Image 1: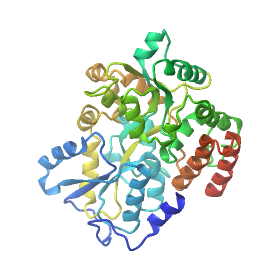
Image 2: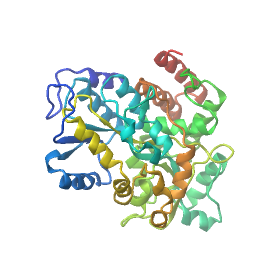
Image 3: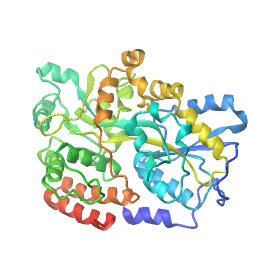
Image 4: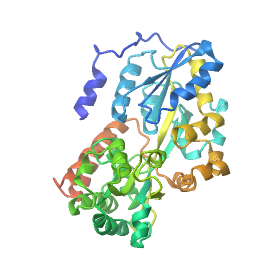
Length: 414
């Protein structure tokens, strides 16, 4: 996987459709593009339609890249590293800010022009690198536990608050109702890194310490990985889940095949919508941990200006438009995605319409961030590769964590 990714980034002769030769950045105004991963909810074009109606001379065009985060990053990195001006505004996973800023692929922003004090503080932090703002949070995310409320109620069971409760219910109750127990995103990609990060953090561990040194080689990380590996071994996590990304896991829950699912908030409106077999029969709760509430990883995406954009003034204005309160309301109501404007989480009308908002806000307030390092992609690949071997039963969780620690020391040098 690492070799394939490296090859994709180093290929000189393969250009993306419509790429220019990299004419350097500019501060002017004019048409711009918004490059993003696939819009699963289909709401982004509607947001841009509002912009385009008001600014026809500075029209914004949506450029949708693949669905998988790793492929999105590879295409953005390929274009930006070569100085292409194809991407004016880029929608970045929160863990990419440090790398893209360090490599000079995105332009620093004037924080005085952004109402960061009205946005969720944790989300704003993901847009900074070395004390400067390089990206503005656009949507946020945090892991949640989806559960079949009808099944638990019929059994007289409460929503699990600990790993032991989750495992017991997944192992005993799920089969009685023809369901699999629990699933997350366990294919070896960024999704698996996130699932492992949550398990490790829930057990009190972390990958790197505050100084950027490797801290994963300890009992907490071993306990976190063993929670997942043991679930596969014991059967309450189906082996099918080892091939799940976000969409496969959502579909499994929405089709009524799972008792529990760890996923992002975007699942809620789809699972509650027309055609869903679990509409009106599920709920959401914080992720469980060893002794109580667990840790959830902060996700989401940030908007940044491509350093080679010729229309950077328009690009910055588009970011301000997309992160303003009215568009942020649309992000939730039309996209079903958590907004970054803090006041929206206490809006009475929205809370009535989206009853999971209070649970989501609590999760966002305590969410853990993944390491903010320029070499994050290599770090993530090392974590997911070692973890996947443990899930497959090719070795113990202890051995996987030891291998992970050794690989991370090579990557970050500490």
